[in-house]
Image 1: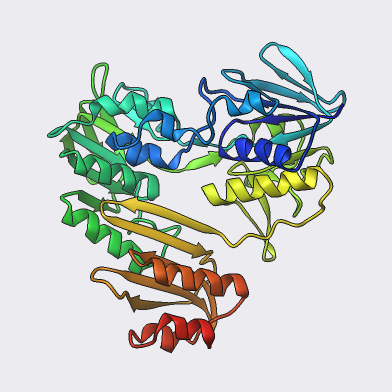
Image 2: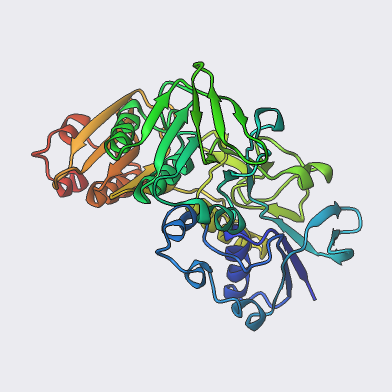
Length: 403
């Protein structure tokens, strides 16, 4: 009987295992996860779960009993330490697990502050796992002083939750604007203004120099020479793909575990999906950190492991919730040369449309789900509306679709 082993029990691993069964794969499936809990959603961790608005049982991707009921051997609290490609074995939990095909869904790991800066002090947190958030949740209390490092989505979402909990929030962005790597200046300015309106002390072009304290953090020294008292620090300075296992096994790594359009690594019986991978997309190699990519790529890999031989060609989409604003993103803005701003139909709604020449690449929609859906459909269809018509609030979005 064929045996598929999946290393990684996150969103991609769970989606891959479930898709194999949905496609009527009857062989053995073993999924190895380092955490002690069944696969769960990560996005709500820094939002509804941290706010106490979502209980643990609603975080689970599927009921914990789903795996046994579907013949999936879910091994929790186990770490895969090596891959023996010659004998097709994974060493995990002190034993060798033979495989016919192997899938790597190892995800990504958060970047941490070096110990020299004070990153090992108590009260310094990252946001990635359930244990991370459970560890910091008791520290979220009104009046406490929190320093957030990093103006990406994780940092901004954590800052929003802290501000909503009545904390004194300072956010440091090392470059000239938040969301610099992933959004246009217009979107950056929108969210910087939003956070400042909610009382966040947002400081751009500023970095941490050192954290001080006896056993736990008490003070922060900044690169502008100022010092400030702090009760806790949240580090949101990005993630790196979890490639150590693949690299040690001799697989090709290129800003992630390198896979082809089918999701196959440099070893023909080893596949990869999710945040840990880089894959060919529009003539380049990209790595996407999103729930959508984790699920869609994992499901595509599952089908290809069973012989579908279908290239993975996504239309990326993302989202972020901050205060009462839902940001929805469709497409990838890489290579844009202009941004068209379109006012929404409701007060406070807005969308930013990214163009390269006359080609629509992506959209950022703030509380404007209609603009998001129209732009997403057009990007999927390879259609690009006239930028002048997009910018004109008198142009009906349906007319853009029919043009």
